[in-house]
Length: 312
Ligand SMILES: [Zn+2]
Image (cartoon, rainbow, N blue to C red; front, side):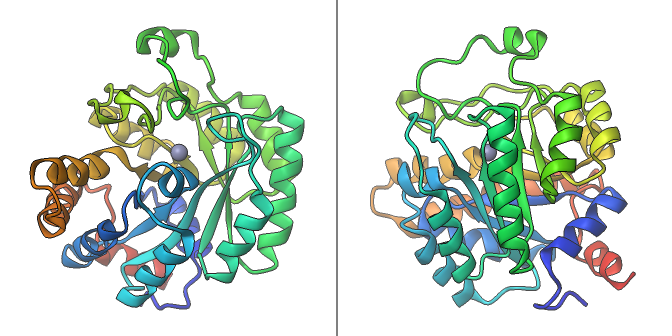
């Protein structure tokens, strides 16, 4: 049985070994927590609830404390865990962030895992910061996700045309760098850039439909060969479905989904101002669509699969 005690590091390790995908859903607004968690429970599946600094700063996630309180109040630990997403060392606006403080806050609030994002630093600096976080959080038995390469899209201003980005491999995670990064940091999971892009978080772009991204599966295979740890795909909304299925077969163990559920919530509120209940129902509907879509392919974890991997 999955128990409250089963550490997330173990769940992810097993998912990685068995080619099962653990989805992670970003909370951009506090009322989204309930429909996300309830949808996972209703479909007897498992996923992470996650919140990033941009969710708090640019949207309506309130604070890391508020998210943790609402999450723990629901008490559905069999179907979910709580992840701290993107704590950037340098944020999307070029400002320095007090990341040490934010990580400490999350550990005190019993987040199950944390992400440190040093992707805007040099390789050496990213290694040094990530190593520090790993040493610190491992003493709490909390796993760490880091990012190497640049998953673009959070920054202000227009992105270069997508096909240009893809063919030039701009920002892609380097294979040699990845090997060195993992060896020197001891990080648990790695967010990679292989053609995926973040949904926009500022200006008019955040309301637009996200471009449909492809993934360079050959590049992913080379990364998976040298890293041998769970790899994470950020920018999960709008990735071509066939690409995603290939990615799961080739080392992607966690996917972050933010834009599509956030927009379901925001667009509903725009049509029916102040009607939070309807907006929550729209999030549940989008969750349902996502769960159904992937369940068909047998890659989204059913509850039974999770139970089985944890019995081994
Ligand atoms: Zn991300």
